[in-house]
Amino acid sequence: MEKRYNAHCESIFREIDQLDMTASAPLHNQFTFFSANMEHFMPMVPPSEHEVYFRGTMYHRRLSRLDLSYAAAGYLPTIVGWDAAWVDSLRQEPAIIACAHMGAHMLIGMLLAKAGAPLAVLVAEHLVPALTEIWKTAARTDPSLRLPLIVDTGPKTSLRRLMNLAKSGVSLLVYWDGEEHGGKDDRQQAVCVPLLGQHIVLRRGIPFLARATGLPIYPLTAFRQQDGSVGVHHGRCIRVEDYRGPDFFRYTMQAVVDGFSSSLIHFPAQWNKWTHLHRMVFPEHFFVESGKKLSNRYGILQGDDAYFLFARRDYQAVALPQKEVDRLCDDAKKRTGNCML
Image (cartoon, rainbow, N blue to C red; front, top):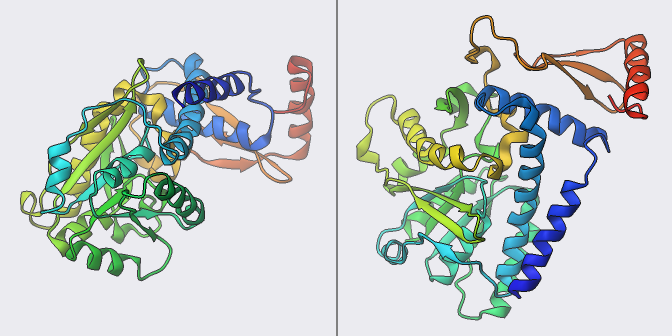
């Protein structure tokens, strides 16, 4: 099965390597946002390398889904850094396990399930059916597997359900960088924390659960290494008593993100959220060096029936008049042979 897995990985790599970035409007738009996000948060990466990193991010995103399907069928890559004693401790003291959508993150739940830790996984509504089927397959392959409970983020009762599960001795696996945990729509339910010299806005759900249940928080990341193994990094345990006062929520989320940042610096292409990071930021709070011009100050976004001029500095978008679209399209045809702007 290992040979089949490696062959599948190579097939995905070739497919993405040959992908035309102008093949579709959604792909073009994703890369436009990806490049702007990289330039703000990782300015040390030359813009000429953004496309390589973008392909890498797509590759790792595909592999994260592949991981879980192969794990359900019984195959796991070599795992380095997994702390079996820590997993055993979860049976006596459950915890909130705060993960990011990075590298082999889908394997974390499987490793915990194989170790027999009582577990609930918080997931977005649209993922519930597919994950449920994968876990059923895993249980048929390994009847001793302790299946996790899958909790949908959608219902308003999900938070209460998580609290009840935690109080009954179940650990909670939560992805802090999911879109249901980020954004600035409700500033009273969010905190602004530093990431790589900029700031992102995150919901307060994880520290709220910790304070309501008394559970410790363990940041955890799983990243792919060049030899094909998966490295696991256990961040410092965060307890409710570590931070008190009005800044409890912000300090707690900052500690979670700090535990992730060191891995991100080394494996930037493995974070799935580069294409969505702009949904977690306040562009008006961006640090941009005075006098510095971004590599390409503007980009083009394509909607269903319109084009927009996208300012990379502050993420503002303005609809383009049709005559400008026609002029840009003619120029694109001369350069590339098609009208994809």
